[in-house]
Length: 589
Image 1: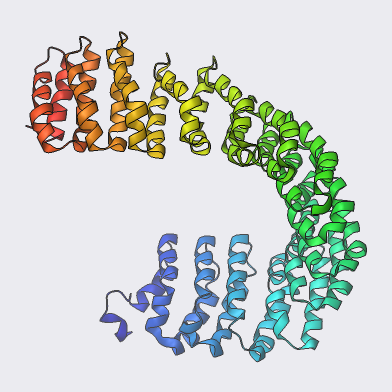
Image 2 (image 1 turned 90 degrees about the vertical axis):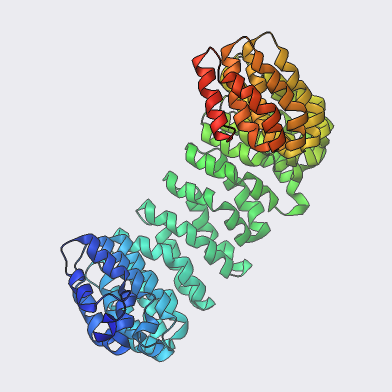
């Protein structure tokens, strides 16, 4: 104890032990989080003989305290004296691996897996393996589920007799009465298969996989699909057809949509695992069925994989498979009733153009892109616009502009202001993909037209859009293309448009830099201080406050200060207020 008294950062041990017994959960939690500090203060000997038994005895606590304890113990190896004493950590972790709360059990298993690597092969057999056996044959399902996660970490480093016992335990758990245990076994099946010798994969794992894949609970069957990927990568090609494919075919047509969803979600990995021949004969028809599935979630998961699936098809007949088998299904999905399905498809469909080449893209894919650009769901439109660059690479900018840009322009002038707003938000993205010359030729006038839209939200978004464009194309482009048009609006008879000039100047000043702001923008702002409309005048004061930091001190003193002083004596209350605020913010008083 004495060692702890001299240093405030080391809490006195007695206090911490008291805190672990305190009624307040937060105090107990804090002391658990400081466990390594206690262990350091106690030294390795006392940590093993006093602290760990104490912790093992106090395992009846709130879940969050137990979770923190399970996590701490995984990093305790050096604090108990290094790898030769690491087995001292097993009793508390074993107790934690049997508690009712799943999160705590999972964390205890994670820590056990971590410290299993620090056991010597002898210690593994003497201490760790018996623990796994005890958990695997526990009365409560909680301990049996935890055991499932520990087989694969000790299997490679034990003797063949013990290996046989481990395999037997795993087999037993795969046919356990409790669905939760079978689920845990199914989730670890692929991982366990990877550490087994190939003969045992064929003799043991395949039969377990088949049984789990036809389990009465769909939550078990869908986890077997995940294991299928690992198992298929381990087996030689000639065994796949007989050992794995019947089960996989069955899963792709399972009566539960969750299982079919899992097949769709793992489709690309399955495709890589089974190789080109099986893909052609089996997976193509299965994929077609998943794209036409009656459940929207399954169709969406399959639609997400369209590009990856097509990319991984064998090259010699890739185009023919896509055109005859996949594209007809994709065409149907473009007008699917569910927006998540359409959105999932829109996020990947553009990628098909690089696989199918220019002619097919123009003939078959462009009409689909056009339909999606006009879809009523904004997410679908966004996904198409976000991926225009890969189509651009294949068919070239001219072709793209003739086919898709009219649709974009049409949306930009849509009667519904929310549709216009959505297109403005995509503009910087489009500009980046199409390049500056093309943008100036086709889209610049649109961007300027939005500045005088009759809806304020559109004018505001258009101002923000200009700033992003200047950041993309640079100050010189702004000076030649944007600034003259914006400043021209300062003389517009409509005061709302004159105010838009000020808003644009606020947004552009920083991006354009000091020279353009001082020489071109500032004179216009100062001139507008004489505007007849008070709203314009007080916005002049706000603009001067905003662009002030960009200007040099000379311009501030000689040009800005006199104008703000004049506005500070204005007849309108608001103009006065904002002028005085600008003077104090810019420190011109």
